[in-house]
Amino acid sequence: MARTAQPGVEKVGFYEPQRNLPRSRPRNGGEARFVLQFAKAYRTQFSSLHRRSPNTSIALVREVPVSGYGIADLVAVAWPGGKTGKSKVPVRAAEFAARVSPTVRAFEVKMRDWRKALRQASRYRFFAHVPVAVLPANGNDAALRNLETFRILGVGLWTFDPDTERVRPYFTPRRRKPRDTRQHHRALHLVARATKALPVV
Image (cartoon, rainbow, N blue to C red; front, side, top):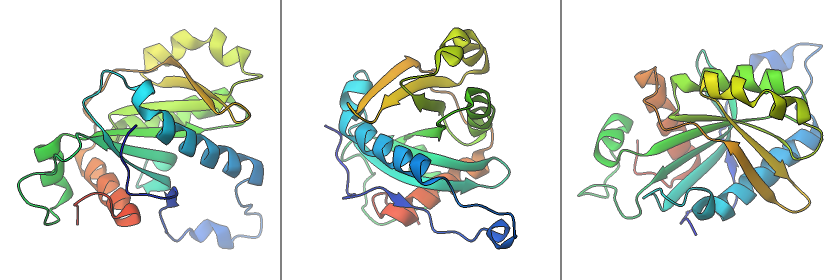
């Protein structure tokens, strides 16, 4: 099993001005629970989902805001266990990325509307190595029929069943260099700040 320093799955604390608007609505409670259940199941099943990966340490954070690219429902940073460099002293995100070469996966979770999940997840390619859209296991035949679209756009398509806690990857894109290095480093910093699991300042 992947090692983690987190007992739970933290959120990134940030201020959202739009929540002050009269018509602003908080995230649907059912969807928020679904995201949290998926996060916990993903952490538990990490090793089996990524059998070929050399990474054994993982840090997970929910609701990660990345300037210009939206708020990712879940961001997972994975790196080789014990490989944090010669020193345990916190370093800048850019140095951590160069030294350890972690993999950043960004997940967009939707109860419905696979097209919206695909559109949003595709924006995560700018700061993550692997973007993935996650949908409920049942009722998403339309998304599966359009799996080729996910492949073309380089966005993963996974499903999750909260009753059985089964995470099923239908397609996972290969790791690619994020398009926006600055925001990639910012995402690492936010995960480090929320979890204290990464030696990043």
